[in-house]
Length: 81
Image (spheres, one colour):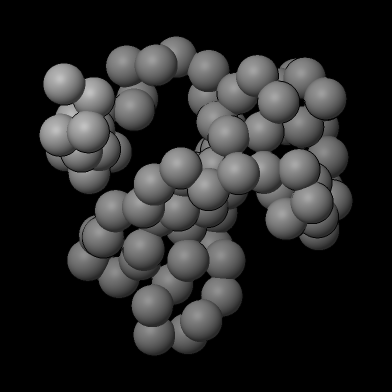
């Protein structure tokens, strides 16, 4: 699956792809959401989960690694040295 093909899917299909093929690699809090980061094939998907209403409000895909910056503080380098 390419990012282009993912982006043209409807929301239900996107959710199925993330559930079946995605690997969660991080999460971060926002005011009303928890944003879960998944890697799917060669790109990333942020899934915005509304904390109070318990629903997914948005899914955003990207391949630019600059957008991983908010997640990097969660990664421990302790075992790598």
